[in-house]
Amino acid sequence: MPVFYGKEITSPLMLGTAQYPSPAILAEAFRASHAGIATVSLRREGGEGAAFHQLIRELNVAVLPNTAGCHGVKEAVTTAHMAREFFDTPWIKLEVIGDHDTLQPDVVALIEAARILCSEGFEVFPYCTEDLSICERLLDAGCKVLMPWGAPIGSGRGLNNIYGLKTLRAHYPDVPLVVDAGIGLPSHAAQAMELGYDAVLLNTAVAKAGDPVAMARAMALAIEAGALARAADPIEARDMASPSTPLMGMAVLA
Ligand SMILES: CC(=O)[C@@H](O)[C@H](O)COP(=O)(O)O
Image (tube, rainbow, N blue to C red):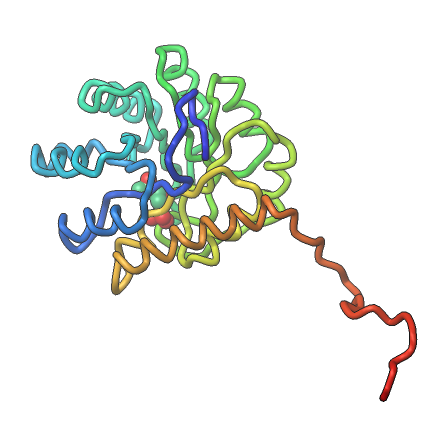
């Protein structure tokens, strides 16, 4: 199971808490998913008050507050401070959005915000790209987890840059890596685990599915299958055929 900042998590599935049809369905989806972490936006929390906070507490999972929707260093850092106070945790999923259309991270601002927050004792989970030099700077800033995107938030496109994600895994065999955002199908989540990622963070694919509870379960099963497959040392894909039945000896026809 993944270990983030010294804390072992009960499942490699990290689930968002936005956009569910109802609080009851959110709770049921969490139960079906056995997710180990719930990520929660302070802004949403601010709007919906104590009932939502109570619901999250009852999920009995680790809470990862996020700075979703923040667009600059100052806004993200201020939101992180408020989240630390409100949720009483040093963890923060750091999102600094750089573009309205793709919601891709502003990696320059992200590094600066990460450096500030790490120096203040936060344990930062940065939502980043799979770019190696950006990831190196985030580690240098003090991050001990990296969360590269699979695809733009809410797009459901899966893993847009498998080569990049694979390279990142190979480059940092000992850094906990999470694919965050863009997952649409269980097969995408399985693929992230097959690449050797430690966990997957997703929200829209479950919350906006026709049956969020069934989709939550499907994601959990896919993530388990992907992790099992990775541990089973899969064969390498090849360009040419290779007979799976031995061709030695003669057939004996009685
Ligand atoms: C909830 C949260 O943190 C999102 O910002 C996250 O990135 C998930 O993205 P998807 O909704 O695409 O799964």
